[in-house]
Image 1 (tube, helix red, strand yellow):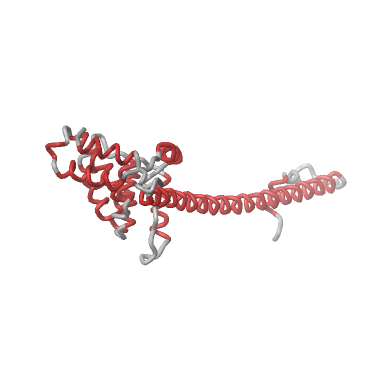
Image 2 (tube, helix red, strand yellow):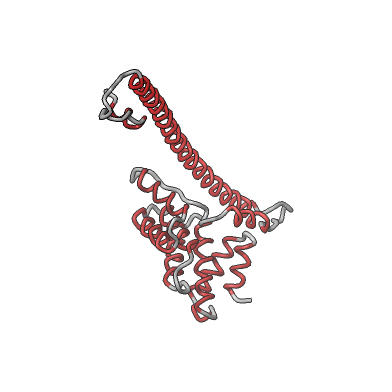
Length: 247
């Protein structure tokens, strides 16, 4: 097997350091990646592996290169989200914003990109903005957990480094989900407050319509007991009466 194949396998099995070494070698030696499509995948996986090791700046470079050679018609949304996450982790907020805007050009309404942009707008420049675990979706997170495997060390236990890395990835994703839930709770609270305001407006309108109807009924009864000339103005409708009421 070639380095890029071994690198993919190592990444999927949680051997991230080995994945970085093999994918890095494959990316550096272009003649060993048999096609542009394979090189694209190599750089994409290399960026993910570097990000998993906390090397955000290097991950951003790999993702940038992958974006440049992405198959047409446009870079995958997950890739541009990954690039934005790497920029955020590296403290490059302006570059992260540009990557998120690229995502929204390709996928208008993408919730993760919109959420990260809101954070960039709302948080101060000195406050770090954290993203997802490389654009993970709940389904891909479940797949990751199902395929997770660890090497064993000479003492007979699991490799502590691999276990720690997996736990870190899971923790990052849980943090991201927690932030999403908090933002949705805030949105729900705002919508509930707005709905309550509309209910109050509706109650007020109904009350005013009832008053207007009562006023119109009173005018009709008064008119029926008055021998008014035939040319008198007709009784007001409820809405007319409503708008003629003095404050």
